[in-house]
Length: 447
Image 1: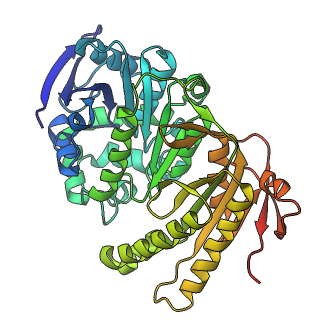
Image 2: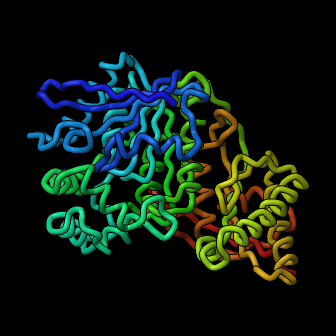
């Protein structure tokens, strides 16, 4: 894949480096807190993804203070870095463009989308956050990370390695340390990270009108998954996908995430807004499934044996969905999202799923515990996917379930009244992104 590196000089005299590859829908990618085009450039090739083959012009930039861009800039404010994105867009000739941001690049992308709604056509947020106080999961961990950056930049710190990587990551501890050393000097790294912790763009989320995809890796300790869920809940109609993996994921985990990004960016004209005029909204039952302890199972069994269990799980789920008229919206690695036009069929399918796995587990060497959550409403449909509050709440409810358990929203219970199902009140919980507490009910499926 041909890749070209260019420079643009901003109004305050900072040189911003960016690369271009592929032809098609304009897409600008804002990297994390540090990056380096020479180190990051081969990533898409390694993942086997060719943006041009999907009709995408992928423009990737190094932010000020990092990589091939100017080091030691006087201004590293959020406003200045948003200006850098616009400078790159104007230099390459994009009047409008899809925009993505990973990690600390996420708030920059969010702010750009909120500030320039007529220019940003689609938005992708990967492994990121709206509030910097969520970084590293706790004040003590944040302070520890800052202390390491101040004192041991480019050194193989156990804390930094544990936060950003795991045993499957594309970079090991030594490689990650070398990446740090090349991508930024200690002073810039410290200043950028301190600025990242201070960012809070939550008030801007409701102003974003571009169709938005939020992706997060579930084992991310540097930016916990709750941060990504908060972003998705704050943007009207945003879709949320999760994949296994750390903040710096494995090749296969990156491949899944970036394939979803390319598919999202390349779908349609790339210039639609979620105004409802181009999307279909129909009453549906939304079902989510998830394997309990998936990550631990994969570590215990290894990739080959673990994948064999997952294939069996997928076959059971797909056969059951087909029997009850369910539509598979997408697979989430260790779970499924499906929809039904009939609420009764949705609940019957959930019961049949748990019964099927119960029967399987009676003789299987590796039992599979699946949790199921359902909600009903009018999700927005676009490009074969469903998104909106109905979908988000269904996912939140599924996450509250235990293994071999089915939880449903009150709307599902009420609409199934008189259908012969047994429900047990499980009380209320505060679902992230929802102002009012949500009451859920357990579907009793065991005889």
